[in-house]
Amino acid sequence: MESIVTPRCIIRALEPGDIEPMYIWENDPEIWRIGANTAYVSKARLARFIEEQNYDIYATHQMRLAIEAEGKIVGSVDIMEFDPQHLRFALGILIYDKSERRKGYAREVIEAIKNYGLNTLNIKQIWVEIDDFNKASIALFESCGFQRCGVRKEWVQYGGKFFDVYEYQAILR
Image (cartoon, rainbow, N blue to C red; front, side, top):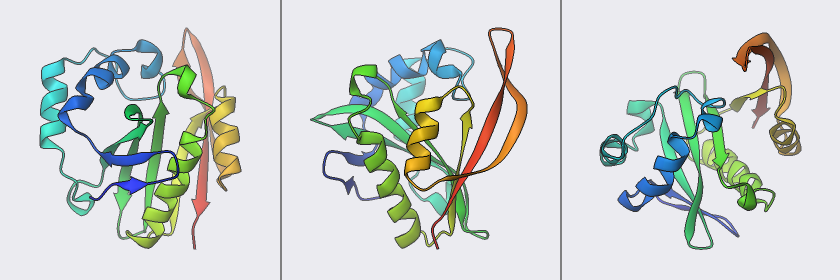
């Protein structure tokens, strides 16, 4: 996959130099709430993950890309559950450092990935799941044209409490 360049970001394949920041992100229990991790990840495992990344989305149905801004990696974007029959995929995005948030990077990445999905993969829609307490992500995706299409009641548990998860989708064509 070629890099996608936005006015302030480069969305690109993972590189060996990305191990250090990814190691911090993948081992932050706060981030586990929004992802699938429940255990610590070694640098060796991350190195294998990066080395073995196959960017043929038709074969793997997923890919993780780095988000680079101002010469450093600030986050990642995941395209998951790519379905070439039904022309859709799920999207996940992380801008890790709170000082890098609210700079417009995520918005640029979402718009670039929507364009990539529409013009390169010929998809019809993108969907996301957002925990109901994540007001910033809800506002971001709504401002990027995603509409709430469902709710999973008391779907996730944190700190002994259950929270709803909202489903959003953007119909691209």
